[in-house]
Length: 196
Image: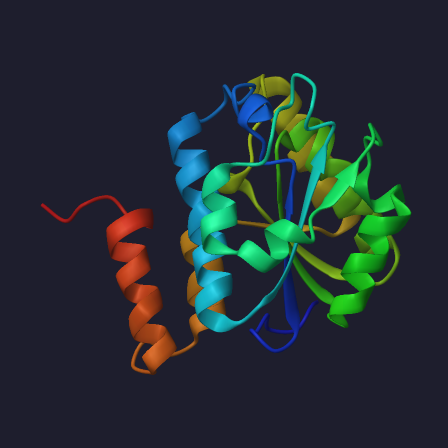
């Protein structure tokens, strides 16, 4: 069992959250997936978590990374790993080097789409001794079936499936700290449904 994920021992990996690929998400509401992805980025900023962004063929149908990511994490955005069509980001030497450079063994991963961009690097990372939590509401697939199969494959390989609010709570540990106060504000304004 992996140890607790903390800001000090974790890195956030956002894979292919691109303007074009986001349109492929059909198993969950695409706006929700976008909101959760950006909430993860904001939580990483609040907590100072090392973040690696990657994209695939930005000049093609996939399009550029979500522009909001540049606003939230400008440094990670500028250093993003632009893959030239490599499907499994883990097999891209530059992406793997960027992950290794974080020095973290706990990886928080989300990818678009789950069934192509997330499943393979998540499984490979676990195979190489990393602890991986895949954030399912910040990821998504074109079909329920392919999403379901990908989730099963990841779980079978030892990937922990989670959701944005659960991940943020695990990282926060204590809502009363200055960072915890910012995170709970983030949860109530952008992640959780409004309290009626």
